[in-house]
Length: 368
Image (spheres, helix red, strand yellow):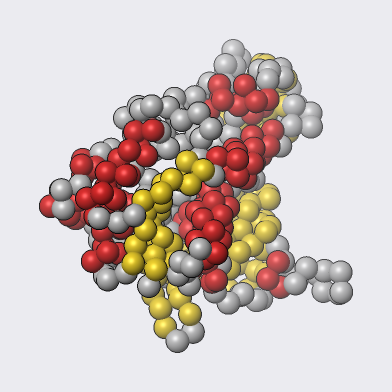
């Protein structure tokens, strides 16, 4: 099988490529240049896609003895991931750029180009498992629960999964680092990347200020009473407690949390923690890793990359009629059996059947 190994410059993608070589595949390494002006070095575990990362990927490919190329996808990344991130915050929503990158870049742009060039599959260092049978392929959680990345892969379709290859899904992270050292890969001890890759300094508010500017508005309580002012609603996310700068203490003396963000009125509503409790979720733009589920069905749902799952009943909402959405595109209603807190529009909800990922959707609303 001809395999295109996406090599970020980290230990996971390097070992994944090495395992693909060991499996007898014809492997070519590719590093994705996603920034127009990459930094020379990254700061510890912050960010990625620096010139240092590209050099590390090339050195790993040299050790493995495989061809290596750099693909410039910076324009598409800027449009599909960065611009989308800014637009979502401007609309008062909380996006997940890693989910978006997997959907639009790694398993759309890269896979499309790879298939056009004659490759059979894209190999990455994601911690997730693919189980194949006569009916197709199923996406499952990784063995290493602490490193599991099935959540950010929940946007993939069956067609994409059939051309995906995740060699690390059955391994622990400690085993992967030990293997990298045994293979003589210089990235064996390289820190994992954290935070948002295109905001290397970790200052999300500052990044958004550069794109959206300052737009002062009111911070209010649930009754509409003004408690303070803000410099821009894009500085806040649902559930946020710090940085509110409210001089007036709450009546009960307890901390306040962001309950709602309204870009239309440019107000941020704050209130008690218990007002963040959510029992129902509405979600749109569903994706299905396999067959579409119809009607109501039980699942475990997850709304954050490293969050816990909650048992729920998921219902595919169909309106019927020729103008209504097909079942596969229909919105979803999620009734949680246990409460969640701080669920924000724009987040991704991923639904599981045991360890298997059934699909995902974008949260449009959450209710108590």
